[in-house]
View 1 (cartoon, helix red, strand yellow):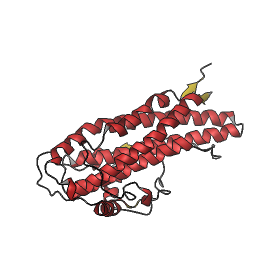
View 2 (cartoon, helix red, strand yellow):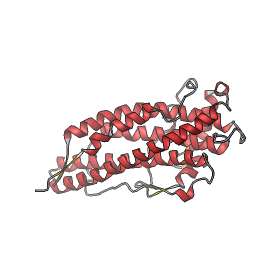
View 3 (tube, helix red, strand yellow):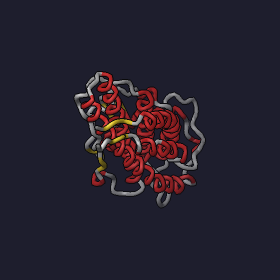
View 4 (cartoon, rainbow, N blue to C red):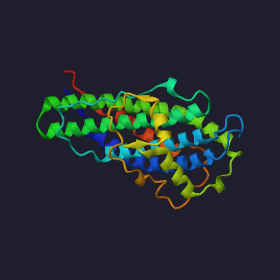
Length: 276
């Protein structure tokens, strides 16, 4: 039989609440950077982020960070479910062949796609844990063990996606360093950044914008075909901000990444396997 460690789960829930806050902060910075980059033109220097395509990809990075925070907030809450006869395993992957051919545009798209993959894995983990609780409440030990097994697989998928995202931080931040001297952050207005994000993302569930469609084309195997069904884009933190954020030194900073790392140990030790 397989079980879920109540202690490690509580640690993961605490970390998840902190991740949600840090992800929202990252989403604001990435969305604002998308506006600045989109207006930079295509001749801004070697290795620099420039042009509408790169700006749109950063907008989807912003959406992705917010979506990751949204999914981790679900982990912090996770009420029980009664559909514990079903099993959901995250199997989302990145299709390198669908990425832009040129750098650094390919890296930005990887970051956006990897955040959606991470969010899918967290969503599957939450679903497994909620079904585990439902099975326990119903006294169905077999289903509880099955859902604990699924939770373990999904926790491993979360870890892999987090590690892949962290590996992408350096190349993205290096591209931003190459960009900063070629753009004027102070020229950006929050209303313009908000409009750009809406155009890039569109209605995620019903009519995704072109930027989001391009990133989704590089992701296969999402567990939930209606992954964005309950998202309200208007609650995105960039769309509720009153001013542009301060110009960042890095687009994926330690605050966001370190909070993701803080959940690694409890997720790694989440599942208890009885081999007796």
